[in-house]
Image 1 (tube, rainbow, N blue to C red):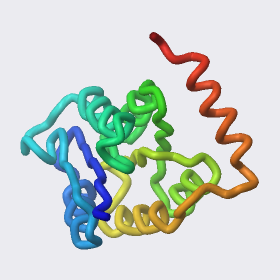
Image 2 (tube, rainbow, N blue to C red):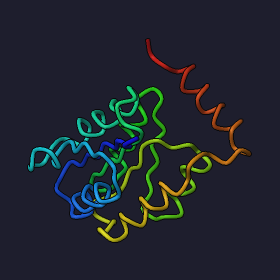
Image 3 (cartoon, rainbow, N blue to C red):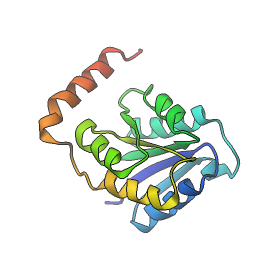
Image 4 (cartoon, one colour):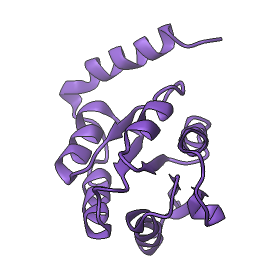
Length: 152
């Protein structure tokens, strides 16, 4: 089964372009959104929303969002029901986000993350196949909070 990932950036950061290529080399079907699709700067809230909605609807297994700091896109993505976005600018944080938080959207800084570091971060992210069993109760509590505060 081909794994689908959606990757969005508000500008043409080197790490974002390299990441799309790297994921394709690893056999992922990559949907590029935002500046990666249009070739010009796009509003970071729009990019993050599009990526998060794709993941929330099950159109992609997980997503990546990139803006100058990574903060704005992570905030927007986390507004979407079912999304657990984590700002990860190093491999260990990315691994932990998957392992302990079951994160499904990876946020990164286009300013801080190099193309080489982006590959290391993604490798750490995909190295985790399932959450740490000792964290399942906490992850369920997180999902319950999400359900409780979901706007209808």
